[in-house]
Length: 101
Image 1 (tube, rainbow, N blue to C red):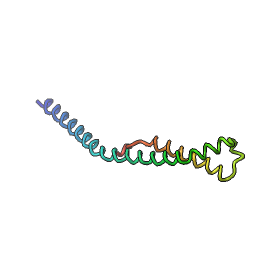
Image 2: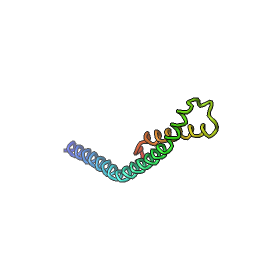
Image 3: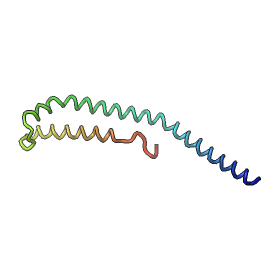
């Protein structure tokens, strides 16, 4: 009889644990959605800025592809494009949710 009670108690504890985990996941869902939307907005903004800067950047590289011959402004333009692309990659690689939710 005690074995049955111990088995029931174990099942009850397991059920409580599963209910708690389910509740935590349900509570995290709205935050996950908002985080996803924030990341989409950030990527859209970065994409827009990259598209805006692409024609002059392309013209620069087509006119001269030797970075060593660029002036300060031209080098700054190359660095800005590389930074924007790097930032976009970092945003895309961010997890939507971490171990803390």
